[in-house]
Image 1 (cartoon, one colour):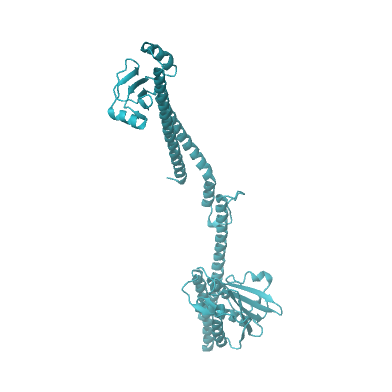
Image 2 (tube, helix red, strand yellow):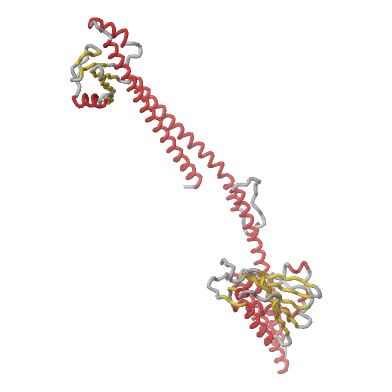
Length: 461
């Protein structure tokens, strides 16, 4: 069962419940009103008969008086009225041919309650009235035949209205659901046409501020993210293939050249040294590609320990001094911490050290004096690390691309590299819910700013 049919049937079902509840309520309210109204009319007829009898002194006049006073135009259908004394003895009855009997318990209820109403099995309604002052009991009986006929007609009318209303509701619900789902149907058709070859196509977004418009906007936003991711993957595969092919082609040409001619021992050594360098570059490239692939699947872990960022920087500087001879690093605090938690973050120590060592390596390779200044600052619930070095600066149009894998700025073209270092650093900082930004300062100073949250901020994975 599709969603449209389900909604239409569900809507029809609820309306059917409302219709049948309304019909039953109307029927029983009318039934109750008819019953009370007829009891009142029966009572009036009984009292009128009793009042008429009380003013007649000559018993011979009773028959004619009944015709003129009691049997008027509003006489009830099959009306029967009797007057009894307190012992239950019959005083007067109408009509004269009436055969009357009453049960003692009903008689007692009339005298005890002064007025008693009851139904007989043949749908006759009875009213008994005890007139204490006169010492009489009036019992009036009648059949509300017109009322029951109207009740039956009302039942037929309500049944017809219910069936007609249900059919009309079913028809209108199917029309309404079809119209309501029409935008979703169009949306579904457009979605089925979306493939990798036409990710640039977008769904039509209407000016109406409804859920369908929001779905279209969100789907277009998802397509935009997918398109960027797909383009990134294509670019990544292209550059990775290119970078892998270059050292492999060089190694192959050198090997074929060596096989085609006789070479001295020294030449073979030089060839092997060259091949070793190419292999080392190939291993480094492969490791970098594996790191990027691994970090893409990694996210922030709540079980990561709390770390002091200044201690991580001290250890990183110590390792960098051993790795890069001639490197000079100055570590200073822009602001002194007011609390112990100002420089405490939650993170993965090895990943953070890898990010900082790569930043120091870049500063070492592309600076003109191999000097790096690191400034540590606490700002509110954030800790910021500024890594500055003097050297050729990036152009404004290059700044947005430096975190893209395999991209290399003009200042790095003369140095060996693959353009993966900053991409790895960016991914590590992103995993820690932080940010990294580049800015070109005065006096040819290149500055990388890393912003991380302290432990006082709740970080969501």
